[in-house]
Amino acid sequence: MPETRAVSTRSLAARALPWITWALTFHILVIALLFGVVKLPMSIVRGIAAWKEIAGVLLFLAVIVRMITGRGHRVPIAAADLFAGGWVAMTLIVFMTQNVVLRDNVPLTASLFGLRDAAFFVIFYFVGRTTPEIAENSAFARRAFAVLVVTCTAAIAEQLFVTPQMLVVMGVASYVQDFLGGAVFTQGNIYGLPDNYWSLMGGHLVRRSGSVFLSSQGFALIFVVFLPAATLWVLDPKRTKKIFLYLASAIIWAGLAVTFTRAAIAIGIAQVLTILAARRRLTGAALFATVFIVMFLVALAAIPGLATFALETVTWQTGSSQSHVKDWTAGITAFLQQPWGYGLGTTDQSAVRGGLIPITSDNLYLKYAVELGVPGLVALVGTLGCFIVAGYRLFRNGANEHQRTFGMIVALATTGIAVYGLTSVMFGDPLVSYLLFWIGGTAVTVSQRTATARVSDLAYA
Image (cartoon, rainbow, N blue to C red; front, side):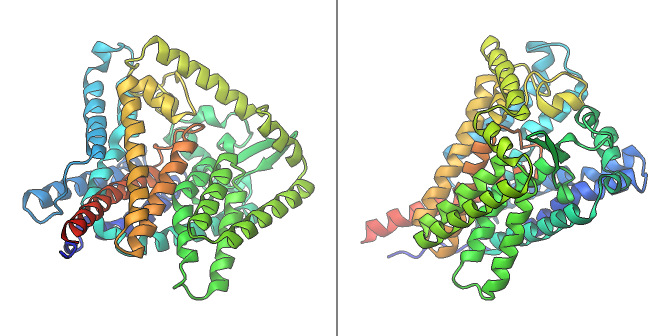
């Protein structure tokens, strides 16, 4: 029986992953402090904020050089390569031709924001394709657990000690209104803070935590990618100090709860139940479901208006539900009228920051359908589908427990993003988009190698 090919020495990209993860975690907070508190000029802060794009380009170039010089991992072409490569190529073509072919009134600023938000993060898929070594240990899961513990601790402290006035002093209002150009998202409160810091529940305003991400929705989003990894880290039978891990898990769930983001909470519950079922921990799944139901009933009794809010959510009567329907209707209508697309920067926050009225918002699929037409929608769905399939295959057929765990992380995280995308456009968040496409690329490569090894084993059996 032939031996599985050994993984080569750890690449620069793999060594950079921990640093990039933590830097992206605190990126928004640091930029807000530099701009709103230290009062550095806009041009200087924008230059500092561009570190993440510069890092992405440098990593991508390092991958290319490594492959050209023969020191990289050799990987056969996969379906995901075609979807992701077509995604990038199509977006660049649209960027260069949209004001001639599609419409003639998209400002360059909107087009640039649109290019970044629609496709830049896809280059991390190709970085992930050349870093299969990150699936050979539990470092990603351990890091996800640590990030959630730190940010959720900050979120709980925010609820207890940080007032809206303190957030203004920290520069949050200035950052959102002036640096991001998002004044339109701050008009529903007297502080000039993002409106999503509050949620109307049965006639009562409830404050939500944004943690170090300065946005409750942005904070909730990271759970979709990190919670499966953190949960698998805690459930690993090799872990010791279980009491500490369970207390830390309680902090994580408390942090998720204070975001008051229904979609993220529901997806998180589904992800954990799936993990417990896949690991055949049916007793644990029943216990988890029971604890959640009890806590939900206690919350219904303790939080004024929560019962009404839950009923309005189920019956699709909340303000956000009605807003979603309005945006989706506009997006579907626009797509049917012009299925070849309206161009980059014409939807969601890219349009707002570029000085345009968004054609549609709050739906990942409609963003690509409206901006890039049918090809953009196909590239999005095809790429995410390939990630899910690769993750599932790796979970089923991985050569070791680390690979199987990594496959489950990728499959659950991508599925969560695919579902969450029905009510949000999340790829503008680099912590989510960069890491999702990175680990997706890794899963595709390791899944390929695992399949090849299985075929070889059968041939020599």
